[in-house]
Length: 260
Image (cartoon, rainbow, N blue to C red; front, side):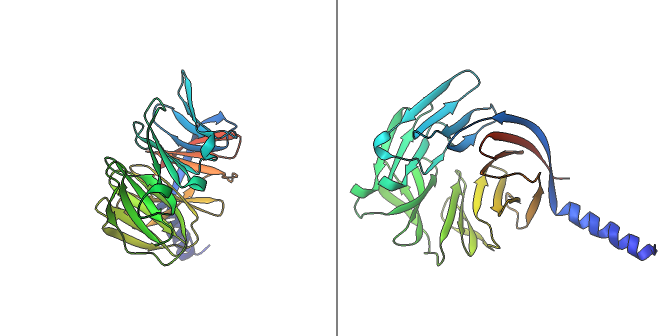
């Protein structure tokens, strides 16, 4: 075999490895739930069941919250365990819970002036929520204690697919672009969406789903890399620091992310 061909193979393999994040299985948990919303380094799981009950399960106990009048939980953000927010899109309402799942605040956007039709919600800093105003097609930072907008962004021109955030960053995925904002609402990056459908976010990583494959964008990075993971049905996925979670509807698998 010619030497230059072997060299080409070696270079190609090295480039492939550099652009792929490998994984190794750490653990797996049998779990039959409606939706998984979050987990942490201590093994706490946040999920909902078919009866629209929200659960916080630790190694020792499980506590629950239910508001059957509001129906199905559309999304939940557990980034701040002292201010968990549950979004009930059918009723245009957000409920804020403390770490014991006691209700500490309720925001009914139907009663706010001006009326706001909200399609996505995620946590902000202090007493704020990142919300997507469906009618105005813009991202807004809303203070639920003062009932005021802290900021609003330029309207987007394509359908919104997902929204994730923490204290410092907000990620808005549309059919055309991935927008990355800081907590002042300044646009840091605008990356073309090449088929990504969903997001999962932790302090260090943003994970994106395309078809049945996962990809990663490291914090402050500009290159989206493929994650080398087993060919599994991905109903839901989460990321916490260096751990990737894949849920197939029955088993929650934990994978260690490896950069090399």
